[in-house]
Image (cartoon, rainbow, N blue to C red; front, side, top):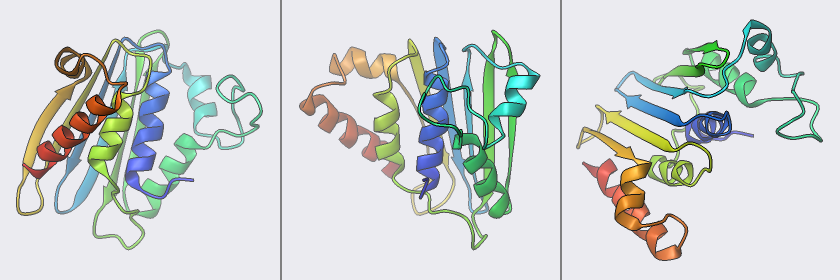
Length: 181
């Protein structure tokens, strides 16, 4: 179950990282009226039949989770976006990649809480898969509007790895400082 928008974004980004992509890009924009995200990958992509199945909660390919009979990530995203007065879009081309976008009306009573954005980014940077993962963040709200970009390759160059406790602590501090502006 997804309790925050960060949970939804994490789930969609994990799908992109598991798609065989060499590059995954995540953009999050937050204004006074809207929370929007876009996840793009250059992975295996989907044809029109696969795309129809991806939005159906009662269908799964059985590969990612062999014991499950349903696939709920994208259907939960669609439901959450629509309930909060927002919307969604998925574009995909077989052997080219996929782009998933969703937007949420921040004034809508049914909008889920945003959640822990820096913690979500830290989690996403730990996903296996793509050679490069790029996170772009733009926040036009609050006392300190901010805009930044972080690349997994640059983090690894600086920290050497993202697997030991000391590196994870430094990564967390860095991401939280970027969010503060």
